[in-house]
Length: 463
Image (cartoon, rainbow, N blue to C red; front, top):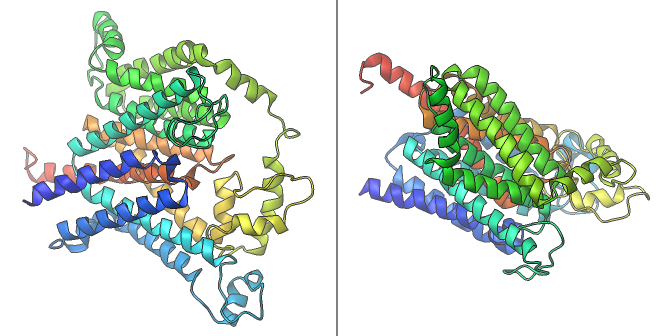
């Protein structure tokens, strides 16, 4: 009965991931509210499932969980009324209304409460992923679900452009010349595809041949198999997503994907000698087929033109970053409050910044502004530990599934870190949710590695 309930909860997790991008990337209040309720309900199910197990059986992940808990405690303090002397000590500039009855670390209590609820939901999603994705089969199913969701998003985005649709088929929002799928913002769409492409690449890595001493004929067969064999469906899905990524016309979305694929591929080639030949075939085939052939038919030249024509004189984002950097100096330790950028920035922007910016177009800077050094350090530590876990799993893991999962996680982390430099991909709940699942999978791959190693020492059969 317990196993059956575990399966129900796991497929509920997959259902949440399937749903997340559909309502405009869950980037509207009603959409992320539905997502939050579903995640909180799922965690209650996980607590009931593990009611007889101490700490939900997550002791091996205690360091990352503890850091995340510290961040949540700190973020909660941003919306708790505090004495004036504490406000003056921690964040003097937050005391903007001396006559107010209650004083807070946050300069925008309403938006910070919204942001805090999201943070709790993301933490719960992280815990649920650690609890429910507990073996190779479920790791593979989670990656497969991401591949399917990304492929459907890509196909939908491609068809809207090829059919010349002026409005979205679902939400009736205007469509420009760039593919957006069910998202509103093309860069969110591109970032989401990058994450799903990472999952698909990890699935192919998981199926690579371990035999390094292949003959020339075997090597040729491996090439054909990777293109036309049992991996053909996955390759088709990857091709669909690459086409959609190119058609999104997102400069950094495309750059982040191919940079992450290249960097992680090169690392894996050196770290895993047994799979070096098969991995070489995969990376080269993806670059040649996806980048040089398929994507060139669907507007890669337009992406290249946008990159070539990009200049600081034409871009307004650099002025936003320059003006917003001053906010960090005014709220260095505890930040101005989660979600407060849009209300704080107008008083700092100069006359040369004409449009209204509700995001900093740089998630690093925005995190520093809203959460200060305390919050930024906690979040950076979480991502760093997951990054290290993925790197270790690629190098040491013998299980092809966990190695492929670690490859996917590392690729997703690097791609996200690159994209965050010029945009705000984590502000879309669907993107943030998928990224958090990748962080969990990185830890799962590494933790299972150490567990299996210890069990192998105790028993020659690993029992």
